[in-house]
Image (cartoon, rainbow, N blue to C red; front, top):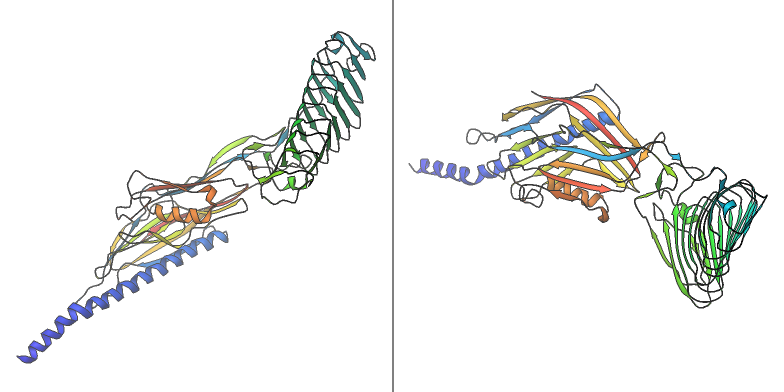
Length: 516
């Protein structure tokens, strides 16, 4: 009797203490085994796509049950099944076609200068006079083409004057209070604009290797835009002026000399190369770092300067004679002047997504949920935060977004028990997006979106991968889907991030998948 009591006591101790501990170890080993199986499958899929092995047949066993401790404890079971309906990953972006130039120039000669009162034309009556000299209250609009032109007009008038000419001298001179709107399209020109007293000049120069001289007067307002390379602007004012200078190009220079105080200069250098255009988006590259500006003002003034680059690198120069407020930044949303491209919105399909889920129905340790979710391997447990065992294949650096995007042609079947499920996978097709390429480029921002029951993990990954200025967003109709804790009902959350990518590399790998 005593021996039987001893046996019962030992058995009770085993069932109460040793068996639960050993089964917990078995369930932990099972979790590691399944994790390794998923990691191997994920690596096989990625490797097949990277090597372009279309048609490759892949297989991976998935152990559903843990090891038991017979005869007292059977194996803990598991289940494999499809991802939550609606799970997906997709990118939205806009593709711009080859650039085309629609800039100024090649206007037909002529206008109404011949009818303006008090104007003398040389040659007389010409629609494209070389010399114009006016007196009185003249105002006129005129297009000049080919060769040098010399224009002298009185003050107080309004003049719209365009020039199409290269290797020429262009001179415009006025007295007090004139309003000028002028465009010069040409290269290797010597260009002079002069006012003796006040006035407002709007001047646009489109071309390369031009010398622009602006001997201006007290209180003038200048709005100058230069599109081109290797241009030089020289501004001289006897007292303060206000000038807004915008330059799209490279190796452009500007200098301002003022004999009295009160100058206000606002300059913007935007990286661009109109001679070798590779995109219609500005800025691109760090071309503005080749530009420079100098100023000499005895008694100070306001001097604001912005270098607009894509990479923020800077070696541009400005004079030390004045105090410049200098900003190195990227101003988004600009289109290079006079260059355009047809834009087509694009969106990867994102359906039906690539995923399946595993539930390890542990009895002696907490339940575990594992998943293959759009290329990531996810681990989660009730009342915890889902984490990636293997990160998705998404990277972002130097404005280049790289994404590997798997898709399954069908959903994975369902199997429950303690046996071994076999996944069979075949690589069906590969689709690559690489921009810029063959005169096509990105236009505007790119948005990457994931719809997943593991939104918390994606949100954390995106915020760690992308700059804080491009913080990810997470939305859901179910409370806690975005901010935890993990819900075994697997509600979907939508995580999105928008980035100003200038380069994009996406591979969409489509697989057929079956479960047996």
